[in-house]
Amino acid sequence: MKILVVGNGGREHALAWKIAQSPLVTRLFCAPGNAGTAAIAENVDIASDDVNAIRNFAVSNKVDLVVVGPEGPLCLGIFDELLNAKIRCFGPSKAAAEIEGSKAYARELCRRHRIPSPLHWMFDDLSKARAFLDMREEGPIVVKASGLAAGKGVTVCKSLVEARIAVTECLEKRRFGDAGNTIILEECLEGPELSVMTLTDGQTIVPFEPARDHKAVFDDDKGPNTGGMGAYSPVVLQSRTRNQIESQIVFPVVHALNRESRRFQGFLYAGLMLTVQGPRVIEFNCRLGDPETQPLLMRLKSDLLPLLLATVDGKLDQQQAPVWDDRHAVTVVACSGGYPLEFKKGMPIFGLDRVVTGPDLQIFHSGTVKKGGDVLTAGGRVLSITALGESISVARARAYAVLKDVEFSGIHYRRDIGGAG
Ligand code: AMP
Ligand code: GLY
Image 1 (cartoon, rainbow, N blue to C red):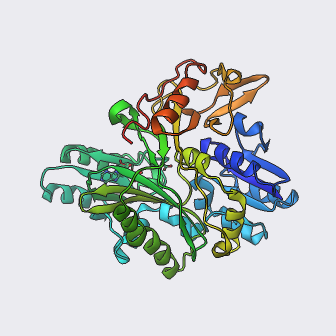
Image 2: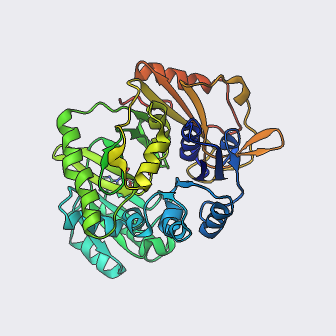
């Protein structure tokens, strides 16, 4: 089978790495991919948001399955385009992807179907949002741009002063462009966060093992949020919590989307907060998390490809449940100097050839490019070093040991990934 993976991050390198192990694969493409995917697949120079070019490539190369990593092309309707061209696409339709593309839609969906979520209020008018804040008691509140904002559209405000600034940034200064035309103000919840990614064809619902990412840039969760500085899996949960997550959130949301005629096929990501009142939805994404995918796929023993194909064909009920490695997986993300603010690209990466990778240790490339014989940095997040171990501390030590050998100018990473586990 010919498979095309769309995207160029660590998640897509991990997906391509896992798919490449399937005996069903005869040819593997990545659009656009990175220096890591170039070693295991054929990179195709098409941007992941260029839906028309991806469709044309898939048609002319008779691709059997397109696996879409990031939310951008899904929200642009890549599934629907490929369906018209009779190409199978793993990922939700444009209508179902709105669960990520519009936080307003996701919140209203939760409200309509009583899925446990923070209280929220929506505004598209600055004076009304300000008047709401004027009426509110002092305290923390969260301000979110409704549309896609590359993970930067959320401000957790400690005070109303901060909230007024965040509201103005969105609705008046248009910091997130059209993505901030509608904002959501949310009750600020407290508790550990958890990422639960679920494979579903809209009928059969297969929650994957939980994972946890570390969003803040510095140790001890200090500094601004990033796309994710590292992740680990499994996360030890009480069975009661796991049951609540499945019965109150994961199963109901898949059924809710069906009832709203937006059947979801693909990976549905629930970003949760485990509050003292129980699990609450922070956000839904229409795809796998990055970097959570990296430790998760290291732990997946089953062939991923038959699961993806069965999802697309609506036959997930005919598949065996995925089998997981009981060991712990940890991913540490090495970033460019300055990330998540301004950073330089094009720094040569040294030492990659010194690292002996294998089933227990992988360097998934997050933002790299190959130039001549060199591998250069090409993004804020550069490498996702991922290790398996009998315990989380063994996995962590194995991942951090790699960072003694690999370097590039400006490299920075958190030293406490998996530390809270
Ligand atoms: P999101 O992009 O919606 O996942 O939000 C990014 C981060 O902001 C989350 O991972 C949380 O740490 C934080 N956050 C979002 N919504 C809330 C909320 N209602 N209460 C507290 N923290 C939140
Ligand atoms: N790591 C969070 C996300 O992928 O949205």
